[in-house]
Amino acid sequence: MIDLAERIEDLRTKKSLSKLDLSKKLDIDAANYNRLVKKGKKLSIEQLEEIAKAFDVTLRELLFPEDVQYPEKDVNVLNEKLIQKDEELGKLRKMTIQMEALMKLFLNTGNSYIEKSGKTPEELNLILKSIIDPEGILETSIKQNIEKLKKDFSE
Image 1 (tube, rainbow, N blue to C red):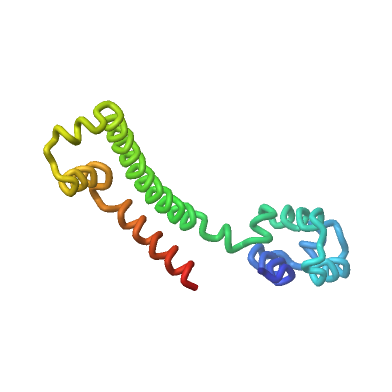
Image 2 (image 1 turned 60 degrees about the horizontal axis):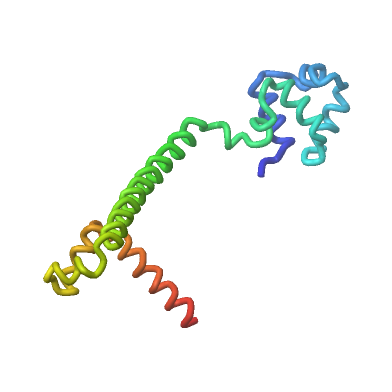
């Protein structure tokens, strides 16, 4: 959290304003300006808005300078996260389509397909695994969740 009195003084210095200049912009006398700055965290929203306006900054910039100092960096970080999530979503969509296709196959052919295939259960398992989870993502996730559950229940 920022020290509001310090932030106001910092902005005043950066904007090359004297205390008198700023007090005139705020339409108060110099003594009241000093009291206003010392109030810091006890300022009303209206007072904060007036101070922000006097500095020609938004209320957010006044109160949260760390949020607005590097907006491009924040956007880049969020964009990278969005790209990662979009890739994950793409993989999940692909898996969903594969699962739907597999379900349709079983609903349409059922046990007769399994019997006619002449494949062993292990072979069918490998075929299904290559269709449903070719990269092993689901299997890994399931194993991790099982281990987590085991750990949670053992404690």
